[in-house]
Length: 405
Image (cartoon, rainbow, N blue to C red; front, top):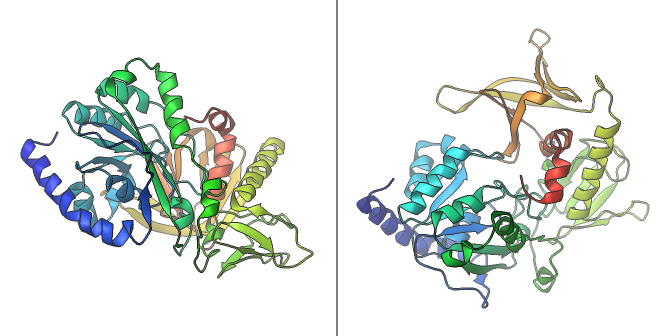
C-alpha cells in the first residue's frame, strides 16, 4: 500500500505526463469526450472500460485528474528495466493475462480501501476484431466491497484507429463516453445485475457501430499485419496461405485477393472471387469453421499445425529465452512440438492441463502447463488460430454466449 508521500509523488508524475499524453496521443488521435458524459468523481473509484487499442490506458487515464493505479497485463513487467520503472511510476500493477487473478483483485480491493482509484479493463486483453470480448467476473464483487463509485467508460473508434494486429495507424476519431454510478446506488444492485450493467455499457463493435460511419477513417497499409489474425482463405479454405501488402490480402494457394479499407471492409479484387464482407464477418466465419472442424475431429487426428515456429521457455528472471524452431501441431487431446532438427526431442502437452492461453505482443502464443509457461513465436502466420482452436476445444461457446468468464 503506498504512503501519502508516495502517492503525492505519483500524482506529481501523473500531472507532469498529461501535456505529453495530450500532445502525442489525445490530439493526434482526435480523442474527444461525449458531451452527455457524467463528470469524473474524486477518488477513490473503480474505472472500467472496453479495450481495443494499446494506447487505451493513456486515453482513459487522461480523463482523470487523480493518478490511477492500473491493472495491466503482467507481461509488460518482463521488459527492460526502464519500462518496468515507468510502469511502476504510472501506477501499473500486474495481472495474469487471459485468466482470473485473485491476487490482483485482492490488491485492487486494498487500494480502494486505502482511498486510491483503480483502472480495470474487464476483458483482460485487447480485442482483435473490434468487438468487446467476454469479460471476467469478480470485478462486480470488488466494486461493491470497495464501497466507492463506479466509473464506466465506453470507447468507440479506438480499434479502427489502430487495430491490434496492424502495423500502421489510421486517422479518424475516438469518442469517450462516461457513466458514473454512486456507491449508494451500487449497494442496491445485485451482483449479477451489476456485472450485466458493466458488460452492456462497455460493449462496442467498432466495425459495425453505426456512429463510426459518419467519421472519415483514412490511412495507408490497411491490410499489413492482418495475417497475424485471420488464417483461413474464404475462397479455397487453405490455412496459413494469406499474405498482406499495402491494402491487399492475398491467398498464395489460390491467388484470391481482397482490398481492405480503413473501416476493415474487404472488397474482392477480381469478379470471380467471393465476397467476405468486413473483418468482423470474416472473424465470425472463422469461428464457425473452427467449431465445425473441432466437432468432427476424431481422437488422434491432426486438427491444425504451424511450421517454422520458435519455442521459448521462461528463464529464472521471468524473461523468455529462445530454445528451438519446429512444428507446432494440435490434436483433439494434446499439443505437440516437433523440432526441425531431427535430433531434437518431441514434446507433448495434454490439452486438459493447458491453461492461461493468450496472445502476447502480436506474434506470440503463450500457455501455462502446471507451473511452466511456454511461448511460441510465429513468423508471418497467425498465432490467433491457436487461441480459436483451443478455446472451442475447452468449452468457450458457453462463455461467449453469456458474455463473461
